[in-house]
Image (cartoon, rainbow, N blue to C red):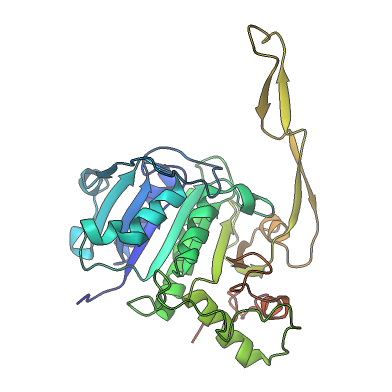
Length: 326
């Protein structure tokens, strides 16, 4: 019988990435028990890629407990997997965690803290968000965390904002997750869409209950982005609008053999268009952006309807989503 809540951690920058180390240390210092199942190497921008039919090695990385001066009495187990962020979640949640740590069941999944933003369309490319979404598909509540600079300076702000959100969510979750591995798939659950029927109109209290229930059951995930110039405040947001311009660079003089050309992907600059309550706008104004995102695509039986998601934009006085409270 477990006596405390555990947080399952992963990322896409790799287990030895500075943001991951800082997150582990911060959670450990605050007395939060953690299990890490993180990629062995950097797997940034791999979205929801998985390895099918390929043996994947899991490595015990408890050497990092002493290297990072962690307090073992709090509870910490560190593993790296020779796979993608989504691989780490599939392996951990579909039996791997039970195999290496029998009897320990995580209450929450946290992915990050990523070095670089995961805003707007980044949600499709991000391995950090892909791992959180994969956890949601397995019925787990999950949070994706990002620091919006590609420079490590100021990362402590990203850690602090992320940990505050983790603590808030963890307080609201049961010790044993309600829907891990979806033992009873219920397309008629009260919080999911009734599409193609028209969505129901709900009062605020009912909508807040449904959104919290959706988070508990893996239909809704949280995505936080903290800028290096964070003002210490939060805003509840939606995905904003940005576009990567001149994303392909061409290298001259690389034609040889069968090589026709050589290209490098990496935007020269980014266009951002203002969107009411958009995450790009929020971060641009020095707030930490918290977005509530549906895990299942539109028309899927477990999707959330637009009317319900509109309530996810309501925020409390502290800037956190209004549904993220008792």
